[in-house]
Figure 1 (cartoon, protein in one colour):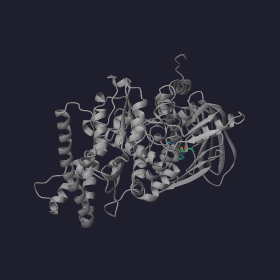
Figure 2 (tube, rainbow, N blue to C red):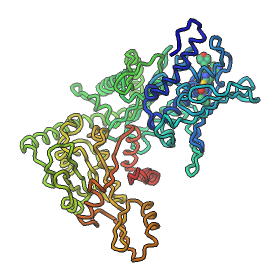
Figure 3 (cartoon, helix red, strand yellow):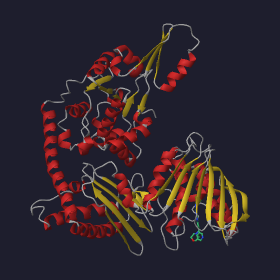
Length: 637
Ligand code: 28G
């Protein structure tokens, strides 16, 4: 431990040392996790600094590159990080930025720190968690270089040449001593960088992958900002009115931007941001928006005589099918809630409510035809909700009357402890029969599903509750749906989807996932849902039998047994139905031999994109999606 010292410079230096050691000791405190999320967070911290420079009005382009050695380079065309001496610490400002914890964390001189939220700890944290960090600066017609490693300066700032432009360039190598995995994922970066580009209209962000075998480059540039974001989110949905409503409003210390459009969907997709941070738990800005929308739609409905005086639309009614992005910027954001993604600043509620109310009302009044479509949709939603209430009550009453009467098609297990029980949802009656015969009766239940289940993305709740397959699942699981969902009543802790290893099977699995995700969200979030992995091939040679689960595995096996003399027999399974009950047990259901994929939903936006893309009835994008994501479609992840 350093001794207390009255000398200001020494004290500051001690703080520097304690700073990065603290970060390396408890990286989770600064970047959340040391898993993939934390790893990618490093990139966002650096990019955020470039975005700040863009918000200040000095940067137009940000290039992000995943290099061959899995380091990441970020380049911007801003003013270039300052290189002048820090008066107290006697080191260049760029060195302070990279070695002093929280340096530059407080914004000043106007503008908002994008990174002011979750972990806004910046370049010094990235430095602390990298084996090496190289920074190049172009400013004042000169080119400078400085280098760091694990929080410390390893090469002092040096002038290395001349430059005609200005900007900053940072390359860092994540420390394998800190991160479980140091390989960057293109799609993860793509998702966040595209989001950043939508939220910062006009900015040009490129992402390039230089790693062998996966070379790729994309540019994200949206002059329309969040208006184009809504358009993007609605790509595979059908809008019910042509124009995306858009407005922005600023005062001295805060600003709000909203874009919205109704589709014929039955779900709402509302995304909110505060200083570019996705506030998944909502908060004051979201509350203000929702309250304005409900009030204005009701007021307009009555004023225009589309609604009767005694009619009233609920918040859920006026949001059915709505896609909206709400983005606010403010000086001192307060993030609250379980995951620190709920905006706490109460002043934001009134600020958003007032501006949203007047702008939405103006849009409706100026566009009576579009207003009529919107009101029509909301009124339909209201009537359907009433019907759904009745349908739910009916299902509840039936269950109450019959006691806990389980569906006839279900072969239940004898085990009563949900933690030890699992249920197989099996595609088709014939495979269902084999599964019933082959299973472990004590712990494994089997529910056969006939063909394609209802697409809940395209049906309202009342219709959904009329589907036998859906009703059977609800009663078998025992935990209810929607607002009444209760995970404590779940009768099986493993829900295993078992479908054929073909396109139809993938489709059925997606339909089931959509249903679980929409109506039993905690089931997916809690990791209770699995996909069984039936084999693709059975190989026999010399009275020995092998099963393989992918083309790659099959190739490998065939090489291995190449030199074994004897007749080779290969069976390619087209469906579960081609296996007898013994084979099904051995390959797919036996606890000791099976492999299963646990289904998780990381991100509601991505999931919505996946589901709506796959589910949408505009066929071409769906086909494209399946092709691009064959990996996901076969759940070979
Ligand atoms: C490529 C990697 C990530 C950056 C700048 C530009 C300035 C700056 C960055 O200043 C200290 C605090 C507030 C002024 C500001 C340059 C003013 C004049 C800058 C980046 C001093 C930080 N000239 N570009 N920091 N400010 N790009 N990209 O990190 O008062 S960080």
